[in-house]
Amino acid sequence: MERRLRMPPRIKVLEALSAIADGRVRREGDHYVIVSSDGSRSYTVYVDEGKGLVYSNDNGTVYRGYVGYPIMAVLMMLGLLSFNKELSEGLRGVPWRELNEKYKNYSMVMDVIRRRVGEDKWPLYEKFIDEVLGELRKLNLRLMDKH
Image (cartoon, rainbow, N blue to C red; front, top):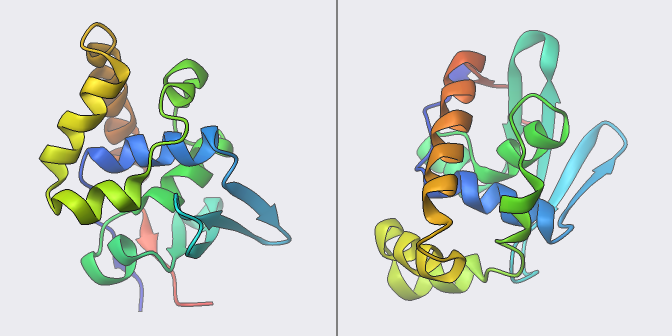
């Protein structure tokens, strides 16, 4: 049964940008594979653009019911969500899994990322996150049955 996916935490937009910068998103036939920042996991993403259906086996999508970063990364690569190469490059090499496990708090991880990219550039990231979340809201994505 299909269910509508909720909006993700803001930080997930940045994780998607980072996955693209790191070259961790690749197409394999009818689906995409996204490798986690530490290389220990990989996620499978399917997108049916015409029906607004998506699937990913990442924790955010499966257990929390929001659009996970692997889905957003694929949608950016497909041109269905905005992508900014410069902002993406600024997030190359971020150890997301390590940071998330260390702080167990997205706002604390966001502070680390803000310091990493620099206070002067941070407003560009905030604006980009708002833009992507607005686009995502309009897509009204639903979770397709597991593949």
